Image (tube, rainbow, N blue to C red; front, side, top):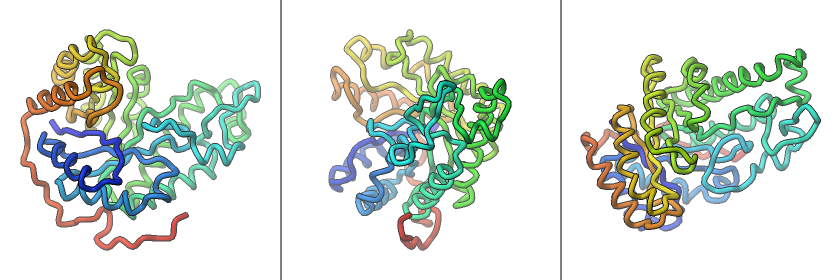
Length: 326
């Protein structure tokens, strides 16, 4: 069982980052997830490159999460999408013509821009994977001109929207694999969106499907963790893909902290390919205790060899030339 840790912290202090990565690696983790928002890469490219190289030196593979691109995915910083703000014509429109705060993924200009951003990041930085976190499921049927043109049958628009989302992810991950076929692709769902499992496992270029088992945030009993987890694992293993289950080790009050071990045990019983959690994350009643307990729990997982072969030090090319930015 592999271990991934989300590192949603600044990369500006190399000595702190190096210490954190060494601590994460000592737990047996093989990868980190780093959230990248639209506005960050153009401003802090040297910090990103230095930080990702520090992860690599510690023996950690870097997976980037596309935070709030088009307001379509989750991200730790509650900043609006630069693209959506500057391209209001791309926004989802409901049947009454009201605009909603996310870009419609059927807009070709948005796809072209997003795919170029993804290609640039994967070609410039030592990145081993890309993760789409909590995609916004089409709970609003879009009546924008693009969707109306692509699907003139109004009665079918809702189903068309869902089919379009799967096709959008298929194109996105095909774009990733064109950069380098070894780069891993992942989608992480919320439990209420597990109805999409059957459709997502059909995406050829999607490697891993995960679930955020955030029982306390969703106001559910901790026993639901194992139930949700088994649903993911069973659906994914039949497709030949990998499963990834996320432990909630943030936003816990004192009662929730006491159920952290129960939550972790539920994940283990589901037997995923990978378990994931957060490094020292937000809003716990006793932050130090939660992180120490997280460390204790993760050490129960049988540890593999702590050194992976990194002769090809930069993914996806051996010689990376920084290209002009967009």
